[in-house]
Image 1: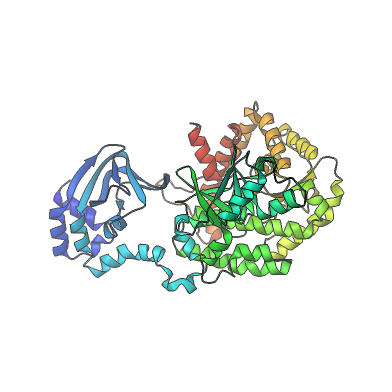
Image 2: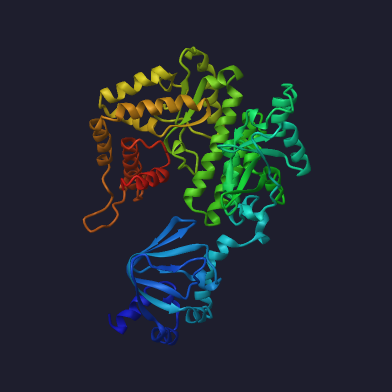
Length: 531
């Protein structure tokens, strides 16, 4: 490549076209061309960045916490933040043999004297990492985007052997001023104040008995270097008020929900708190504005869509569970399982879409008992803001409200007749996720599905053909084909997302993968060596 061609390439990359001719001439004299073989580590926490890289040929993977975050190819550049702030949380590794331009750190920093170049490279970082000076405008959850569990105060953990007496365990708990006792067992167990009241005091258990004799729950834990964002997800998903914090495989302490909430200047508007406190459908309806604001905040802070959908789906599950609690009488709640399907079942929903839900009822229970509660549930969800499903895939429809044996018969009918309607219903059910009630009912049906499909490649083949019903919206010359009937817009779902989601769904069924989220399915498929 000639010097002129090199200059044209550099000028084609924003914001270098903003440089004055003299500055660009000086830069061209200082740029080096480098080669790095596959698997070379270029930048990491422990390997400071020495240059700004512009890829000529090859590719580089960016990892954050060992998870693939970005892929850079021909014409891409990285990593300005590592040079400007002299640190990074990411790891950049050569994926395909790399030929690139290198602008040394000192030369790159000189370019920032140009205010337009400086504005470009600083804008994204400031947008995502501006601290609490615009806290009120950003909302209560902003600290979650920056803070880690290690930033929080951790309560001392009271850990005892399972053979220790209840009396001595409580004595140790008091001396440490701990709120829970952790029992060394396989796996570790946890006992709270309420456990001791219910299972020792009220049950009149002898305090000389071993602590291990008390029925206890397994630990919910999180790594000390994980984000508070994920701690919130754990507490929300498991409906617990504390998580055990681990460091290098050892217990480091206890993170309490109350401490986490007090981390905020005003936590009264946390969506999860409002959902838990809601006692009516009207109160849940009022929460929707906060949920929309939360999505806007997360998006404006540069949070990846995958994490937004993960949190929003978790909060939507809490709303479903609360509505279920309001509509179903106590004696029936553990006799059924409320399912969400579609994008909600895959945890890939950012904004509310149509309701896609179903109900599994325990065998031997009168199905008609659930008709009125499910009518109320669908009506309540509609009032809150979840539109009705145009295909009537809802618990108010008796087709999607039956007992376990009824669903098994339904599954048999789906694979006995390869009609488009049957295969579509089967695809919908494959994304089912239990949000409340008896999860074991769904697990039983999932296991039945796996057994039925273990030798039915013919059904899988027919299901996979659905991908061919939608053409890739690319012309002969690789231009996007827009839809005239929709103001020349591109249908991303029909043209791209559906084929990917459905293809991964079928592969997951073939390989007995229980995950419903497309990203998680891909991870398991990759770990199994399928892709």
